[in-house]
Amino acid sequence: MDSHSRLVQLFKVLLPLAALGLLSTLFLLSDSVDPESTIPFAEGDVIERIRDQQITEPFFSGVTDKGEEIQFTADSVSPGGTYSPAEARNLRALLTLNNGGHINLTSNTGHLSMETEMATFTGNVVITTADGLEVTTDLLSTSTREVAGSAPGEVEGHGPIGEFTAGSMELGPKKVGGPIHVLFTNGVKLLYDPKKSER
Image (tube, rainbow, N blue to C red; front, side):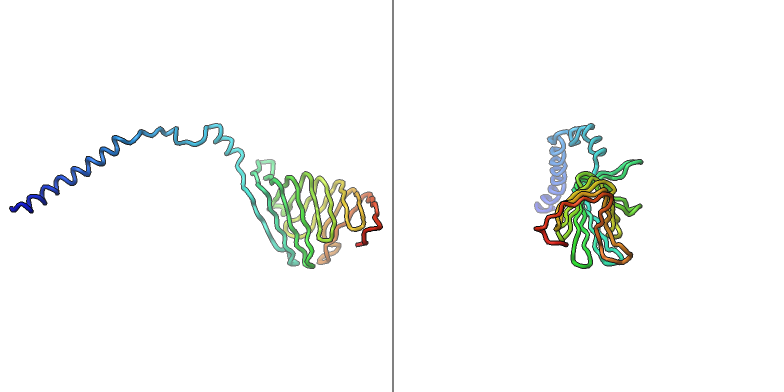
């Protein structure tokens, strides 16, 4: 056997041994890992995050049978419990009408139920329309499948003809398939401003 062949045979033995030596050195020099140190949250933080789980910036949209567009958004939604619905923070809705007009709804909190096809706006509810009407109330219930809703409590606001208050408000068509109206009932009081044009 010549010297070249002996050198090849020697490398066949030495190279695998060198590789094993390098691998063993890597394992020996590596730091031991503490399993608890890899957990980024304390047990209390984990429990709190599970309890306060939420969906950020949820979005729901649909089109009514008449072709009107309904969109609901919120900053976040926290899941509800057995006897309480999921709660949305800064709930908003945009209702786009067939005539090109729109109605904006906002509130501090609210609930959206796919089972009942209803949305409930609570806390500093503000309703604004494209023609300059702005109404505030504490509670507003609306449909998620059509442009319709009601505020059973006191409402106040202002519009093209002045400032007003009322015991309740209804939103929707007066007859099936008709245009959308905002109807105030139960002791309407209007402070008429002659400087403003009539609607």
